Image (cartoon, rainbow, N blue to C red; front, side, top):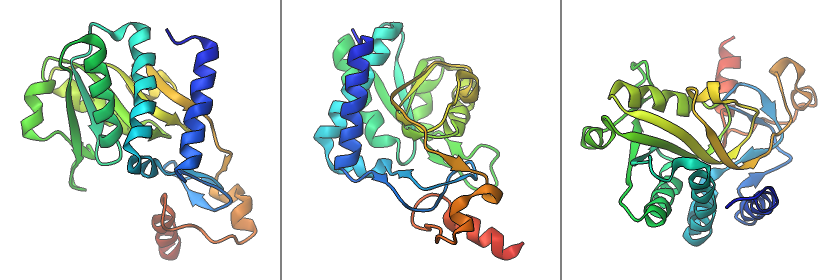
Length: 225
């Protein structure tokens, strides 16, 4: 069972894994999905290079979820492509082993820009989600919009979203932000951020990073305005 003390130890361990893998970028100028600016960025993809470390983190996350009463209900895991796929696959493996039954793993692909929902579930996966109890899994979550969009897809297929889990939540999102389901996270650490008009990094003319986050989109928008 995950006690408060162990949870703190697990969070510290998870942070050490992120740092060791180079997944925490600091002293930069990044534009987040929310449009706010900050000096730090979490690069979830960097964890995937070390499958063993990633698997360990997902074991702890699955343990947290199972200890919260979802041992009997979960039937399938759904992740957003592409960053959520590696951690969600490991998560499904650990869940299956813990409950001694198969828990399927699926993902939602990014849809065309003309679609209302930015994600779509491949036809091959729909039968695993329809009328099933689904758990959503991603790597790093900021606004929760990906989970909210996935929840809509699941419910459109008649599925039931039990909850959502991620390695890191970077903001103070609540259950209602992701479709009114429980949210589990190994790391709950917020970065200081600012609206563009209040951003001290902009005022000091620090260049915006266009490799990560939404810096390139922001600069293009500024050129057009």
